[in-house]
Image 1 (cartoon, rainbow over the protein chains, first blue to last red):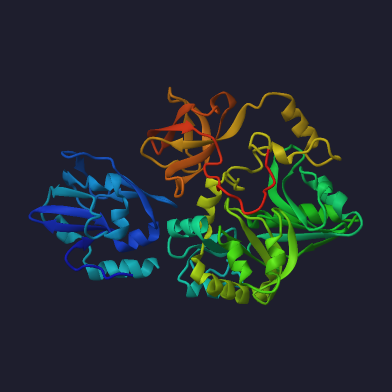
Image 2 (cartoon, helix red, strand yellow):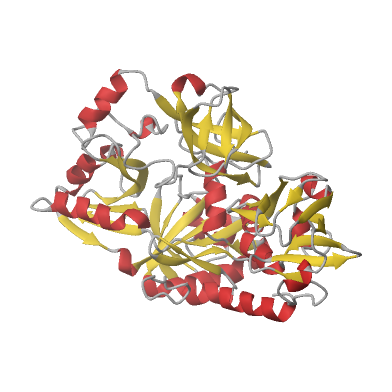
Length: 130
Length: 379
């Protein structure tokens, strides 16, 4: 299990959210990737300008074995989608905390990302999930 | 989950744990679903070799003077055609003509037959065979003391060539034939069968011998690219080869004819369970058939997803579906009205509310190019 980066926040559903100049970059954690296995399809059901709601699905991720929902860690407006994932879903396997990012959100409440789990709290979630 | 006392473990559990397998509950067993990853394991089996632990499967033995007749009454294929050392794939049906299980029957001698059934059906099939044996032949459930390893892939026989004195004899085994052999110093019954669409063998051995056999094969195979392979890869491999999976593509609500298994129903043999019902099914056009399809839109069909006609009405159901790593497409199997099962027919898959385009294609999705020995043809 790779280290959990301390530069961002997490949800119990294994998404990460990283504040970047007022916006929030969203992806899934190494634990989620490990559970899913080989990722073959990332379906983002939103486009730039759409709003997403905290805890609600904004897309799905398919691996060879299974399908999983992608949940928005915070409420806000979609600013950017990772278009590379359409042709290269394996980026999520290769670099889930970097090139495998999924969306950038402009949060309704700029402090909302701070209320998510920090890496210590999230590491407990992972420990209990094993 | 891993410590549930309700789950049984094969004698290879420690081997899997050491290899870092992810273990999941499957048919009452704690089985490896993957080691390094499904795609890597799948690819290893297609290009080199993979080793699977399938010790959870059931082994039922019928013996005695009338054993052959009893077994033949319970299955749809004709085991009277078997010679000693030969095996066949078959269904066992109920009186209604639907499928209780799919099996491989091995003729050890004219008075001894081994029946391998699915782990999920072991209890049911033990009941069926035990009851049928009463007053006619001897029955023994050997599942608890029989381990089963599947060595599959184009390099499987290269590996066996390094695995001991019986290598030359094993190389001569024809498809769906078996023999006793010492493999890596372990007494085995080796059968040229499998569930991956590749050449290979399935090795039966004593429960307690399996770890030695596994460890030896893994180390002999390392240089050849042998990888341990889990149930995840087993599923994608068998789907590409269009081999049915019980509980998905076939079950007690489906009959062999609509499932595309008509070739294992022999109406011209002696009477068997389900014959009358299947005779009726055969007499009229099949309302639905199991068809193979490719998802052409963005999506993966999964078991249970509705299949829709182009107008959006539900016309069938997906029974298996996943990305097919060798084919490089998302494929599936599902029951469709017979009128929609011609290759090229377009329809939709309801992927959780999203209609995704699909097309009926020829199966198997994957066929290996050059079999290393002449294969028995499947009509």
